[in-house]
Length: 150
Image (spheres, rainbow, N blue to C red):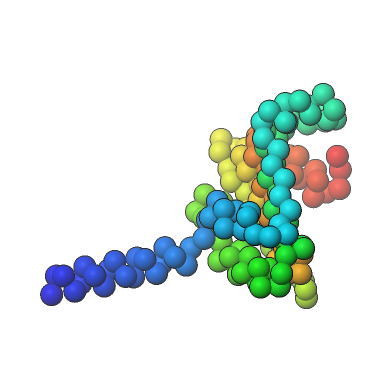
């Protein structure tokens, strides 16, 4: 009886873990699909770009990662959209969600020490994409963007 119970618990845990999708799993799964456009700007690139950026805030972006599936097949887009719908990572908080007729957008934030450490924008629809910003972003900067100020 113990053996059957153990197997049953393992099966349930496997199904639960399989239905949850993390950000890195999504990126790894789709980054190598054909016709995917991807951009990775890491700390070194951001350091060299610093002199060309306007200094209006104390926020610092350390890396940018973009995955665009606009030119992919409909089957790949559907799989990607489905993965984004099942995105479930306890490290991120849903900040904004928008559902339009042909497009859904989700903005997730990851906080540490009253600063946004990561911002993830997910778009689902005919032009699905994933954008991840890492750094130290002040909440006031997000409020200023929301209010239309720089």
